[in-house]
Length: 114
Figure 1 (cartoon, helix red, strand yellow):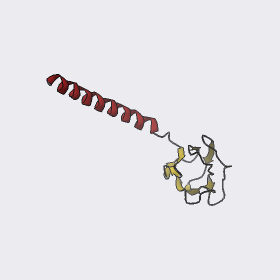
Figure 2 (cartoon, helix red, strand yellow):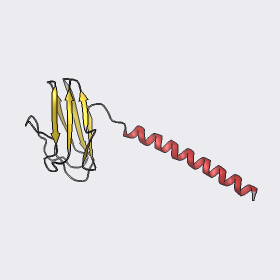
Figure 3 (cartoon, helix red, strand yellow):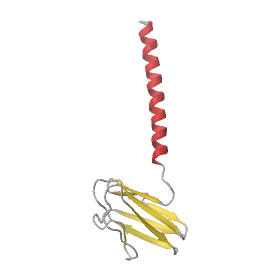
Figure 4 (cartoon, one colour):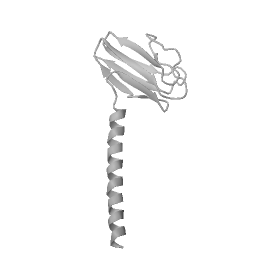
């Protein structure tokens, strides 16, 4: 009986350690590179991004559905991005840029260039 209790305690401790290590690795894997926007679950992530003038922003579509990257002022517009496709735009001038998906207009983000 005592042997079973020790075995259970060890399994609980070991399982907790594995979960903790896995979740730490998961959060590191999801850490975003500056100037990168991920398109996933029909959302831009982050929804607000601040970069310095002269920076290039890269969008990567991780959804199974195509998406586009469109500036509401008409400065840029990507082709339809299939899963794992990327699009880049270099922001030369400071300002606030509103971005949306031309296929799914409810997907929006704001990029502030300083």
